[in-house]
Image 1: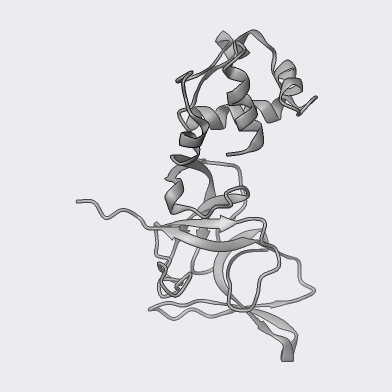
Image 2 (image 1 turned 30 degrees about the horizontal axis):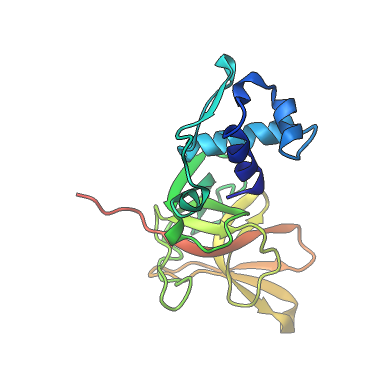
Amino acid sequence: MHNTQTALLNLAKHQDLGALSLRQIAKLVGVENKPQIVKHHLLQLERAGLMQVNLKKSVIRPINRGFNLKTVKSLFYSLPVVGAANCGPATIFAEGRTEGYLKVSTKMLPRKKQGLYVLVAEGPSMNLAKIRPDGPTIEEGDFVVVDSTYKNPKNGDIVVVVVDGMGTIKRYKEDKEHDQIVLESESTETFMPIFIHRGDDFLISGKVIDAIKKPNIK
């Protein structure tokens, strides 16, 4: 849980936050002059089911005033879903506005959760790619978990790359002999690789660390 969210929960145990302005709350939790940061974290807590938030009616209160922060940390975490990334041609923009939040058990996520976001995989070009030796492949409709803080990929990493404003998920390969980067597919179908010169305008938007499989429910 983010430090600001923990501070908000602790403050809510002793004060009626609904009687305060966002700017006043920001000062009390250590992010003075940043009321929008407070609003963001309040909405995150609401999505996690920990706070009731209605700013128009000045209602900001914990769902259960007897909550235990140690228990809260072991339940669920809301990851922002920022859009879709094509696992074939690089045709879908990967870094856009948040489209929603995916609530995931903390047991399904790494210990470090800050900086993570989710993309929905589209296309079959990575359906043979394993994120780790014992991990899942990336198939269409899967929720792909990305570490946005990982900006310097190593040879063989699976990454989200934005090329010409479009996002794609591919295996990152360094071809030092020819001074180029190759983005490769791993698929049951045939896809041409994408070649990038180191001087090109491209963005590593993060490293794929997991995939939450699209549910197969009948």
